[in-house]
Length: 259
Image (tube, rainbow, N blue to C red; front, side, top):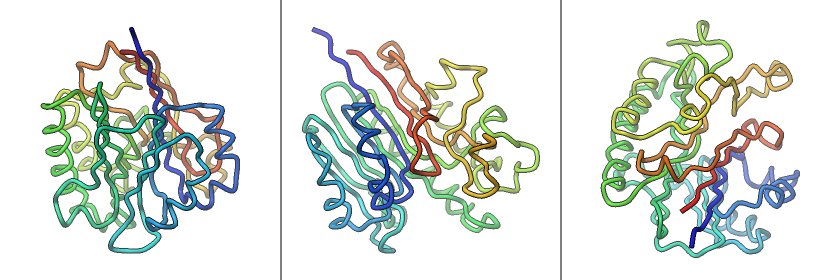
């Protein structure tokens, strides 16, 4: 008997803020089996308390240890996971609550909020080290079981993924060659950017700057992804970027699977 799984990933830019908007209605409408959230901006207690209203889901959170109310991730699932583990086991990279590992019968799932390289690219060297360690972590998981990695990768991979590539290239965080190379390394390791695989020429973005009416003008970036082990390619039914949902500077993305 076949089974289906729908995963939603969404950088909510503050769980306490978005929950006051149409978040609950939007989630009910999308009806995902698994929800991966990034940038929750809440400590563990606050995050769990805020998400208590999500009836029918098991709740798991990973909050920043270094700075309260910064970064943070969460996974909600209708079925109890076999395993949930926070962080990647590298102390310097495990301070900001950026990674969660979820396992079920069919796949490993990694929810990630990749560090931004920051103003004037101050964190670019740190980001480069992060990318190496995170890829190493995900590669090891994929050797055990097919693996899906989702979240805010904070990089536009190709020119098609950013509205204004030329003025941003090697000047803006999220579109430097260092960050692009970091993403390329996942592809070289056999992971698939499934949205681009299925939509090679489609221009669609998942993040817009709050300033300059960027979303109204659709001057955006595609920086939220599902990348997955190539062995899962035939299990993918559909993947989408949901520009119709608001509440954050990011929109949700979805992945539908059948097993």
